[in-house]
Length: 272
Ligand code: SAM
Image (tube, rainbow, N blue to C red; front, side, top):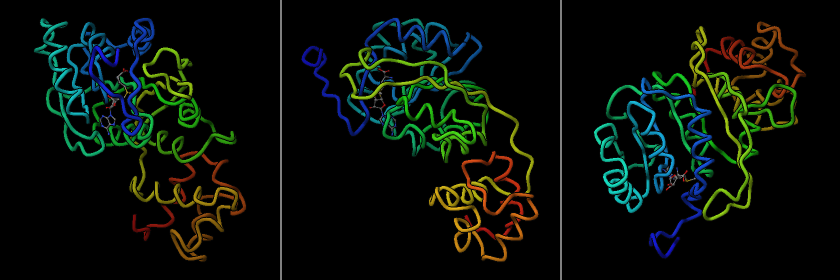
C-alpha cells in the first residue's frame, strides 16, 4: 500500500489510517449523522472516513495538516465522490491553529483524531465551534477512558473535567489495532459526546480551567495545598473552598466540574 500510494505515514502527525471498511461504516453509523448534518472531520488522511461521511452528511469540512495528503484527498473526492464534491470543503492547516471554519455552521464532529494531539484538538473544536451539537471521535483507548471518566476513578482528571465543561461524554466502544495501516502499538476507543448547556457562572472558562490545572498538577495533594500560591493566596483559597462548601482536604479527583466552577467563582482575581 505504501508503494502504491507513495505515502510515508509519520508518527509525529499520528498517521495511522483506517483501512477496514467495516470500521469506517461503524464510525459513521454510531455517529448518527444524517443529511441535515454539517460535519467537521479533523485529519481526513487518505479519505476513507471522509468518503463514507460524504455519503450521508449534508456537508463535510475536513481539516488536514499534511499538504501532500490534502492534495491527494482533493483528487480522491473528485474521483470517488464527484457528485458530493460540491458539499466538501478542505482546510489545509493545523487544526489547533484554525480560528474559523468555512462553509455552513458545523453540527457534528466525526474524526479519527491524530493521537498525539487528540485532547487539545477536541477541546479546541468544542470551544471554537459552539454550533457543534455532538460528535464521535476515535482516540487512543486510554485517552477514551480519561475523556469519559467519572469522579473517583483512576482515569478521571483534566481531560474528563475540561470535556465535561462542554459536553456529556461517554465511551462508545473499542477498536483493535489491526484495522489501521500502519498498525499502532496501542488500541483505540470511540468517544461520543453531546453538547450541554454552557454553565451559568460568573467565572470564565479560562478561570475554571486554571483551577482544574492547578488541582491536578499535584494530583496526590489535597486541594488546599495544590491551589495555594497557584490560583490564589492561602487565605483566598481557604475562603473560596469554604464558600463553595468543599472540604479543603479533598482531592481534585473526587470533584465534579460544577465543584470547580464554584471554587473559581470564589477566586475572581485568577488571571488565566
Ligand atoms: N481519518 C483518517 C483515517 O481514519 O484513516 C486518518 C486518521 S490519522 C489517525 C490522523 C490524521 O490527522 C492524519 O491524516 C494526519 O496527517 C492528520 N493530522 C495530524 N495532526 C494534525 C493537526 N494538528 N491538524 C490537522 N490534521 C492533523
